[in-house]
Image 1 (cartoon, rainbow over the protein chains, first blue to last red):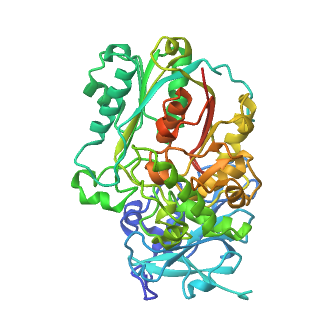
Image 2: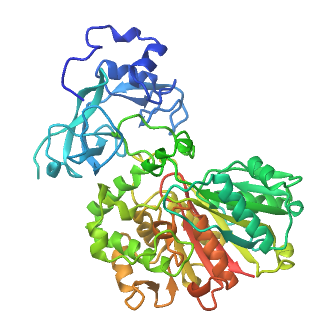
Amino acid sequence: MTEATDATEATDVTDVTDDELVRLFPGHPITHDNKAAYRGRLRRVLLVNRCGQCGRWHEPPKPVCPQCWSTDVVPTPVTGGGTIFLAIFLHQGPPAEGVDYATPYPVVTVELDEQEGLRFTSTVVGAANDDIRIGRRARLDWATRGGVPMPVFRLTGDPG
Amino acid sequence: MIGRRNPVKDRVAFADAATTGFTAHNTDRSALSYATEACIDVLRSCGLTAADVDGICGSLPAAPQVQAALGIPEVTWFANPLVPFVNQLTAAVGAVYAGFCDVVLAYHTAYRMPWNTASAVKDPFRRSLSLGAGPAAGPGPETIAAAVGYTAWASRYFHEFGARREDLGLIAINDRSNAARNPAAAMREPMTMDDYLAARMIRWPLCLLDMDVPVDGADAFVITTAERARDLPHRPVLVHAATLGIVDHNEEDQQTSLRHHGQHVVVEALRARSDIWIDGCDVYFPYDGFSIIALNWFENAGFCGPGEAGAFLKDNWDAATNRVLIGGRVPVNPHGGALSEGGTQGSGHIREAVLQLQGRAGERQVPGAETAIVTAGGFFFNAQGVVLRAA
């Protein structure tokens, strides 16, 4: 994970083929239900499915609205603001670029401001572990891994 | 909608259970070798032959492989649901009750694989094995999918209730004290709270001793009609009520709260279908694949209120045996549970329940045990439970 310029920045990513998308995100479980969200990542936009009929958001992406069964589900940008709901620190884990478990690696589930119970999980960057606590405010940011953008969170607001 | 209908109540029984015992290192045996050993033991114990079996239900390895290895001539029903083992139990009990078969050989092999222990990959024959449970997560660590989810909700439990690691430690110590009396258990050395607190942190707030022990070994069972079981050598153990439980928000990071997940469905269903509940339970088996799961089972089953499990365990701690005795009487996971007997995904809990109700649990025997409750699985997609009673 680095803050450096990534390989996709200069290219028009809206036309990336399905094959290219899979190649850019090796190991990710990309399906027809979440491919739009992965294309969003290439543009540094976090897309969450929202129902075009009833307006409910849901995550992870599903082909139908669990609330009203409409198939008019629209990958929709979120503001990126939220509150930490779950917070853990990995003392070991899968090898990953930019991750050194010598300092326990934070993984947080953030409840997004769009809707109660709508959550997204990633790490927190730019903060000491002691400051990463349930209840803290966070906002979406972007890092890079494997040459493609990765959604992450940064702490915001009063440490409380 | 949770139904009260329970036509199968007490109509299908465990005729017997057997185990190979469990080992917490890579052995030079295949999963099939453990499964066949346990299956042969349980059939011989029942005085049955391969030709008496007409149904097979297991986890790993696949039922046709077990059938071929054991030379079981013909079966009319088989299935391989995912664990935990109440999945196998409900499938087999339903098949017997429906008449798809009469005598089910049921088994589960616990086997050290990359999903439960990184050191499994030292054995090249294990590298490509998987349990096949749950949707795949991304390749990085930025997820709480699968096992990590329990650590994440432990962080929430600590946040909401001010719980401490010592509360989890009581679950681990209870298991270890019980395992000392179980020759099948993988981990039998005594454990103190200091030992627990000093254990290697894996994912804060859970340490190594909060996580079940990856083991090699197998359990096997004969499940048949209550009538047929009465003609076999051992006291039948009747399946009184059983259920699985799952809710809509079953992705690990989308679960609504600690107050609404699969465990709550299980408890509501069992209470609706069973004549027996915790006040009439002689031996209790809360699943403990992670210590935090067991704490939540105590609360959700109704032994105490939300956030009170640590205090409940302290109040019901038997200092003489360094373990829990609910009301001074009811032991909890007397075989040592997943944390000390070994990570059996529930088959060890059910095997011990069967042996206890048969009166064949050796020095672990609960005097006069007639009823057992097993609340297996965790929060998200594998909560389940069964009430058993002696015939």
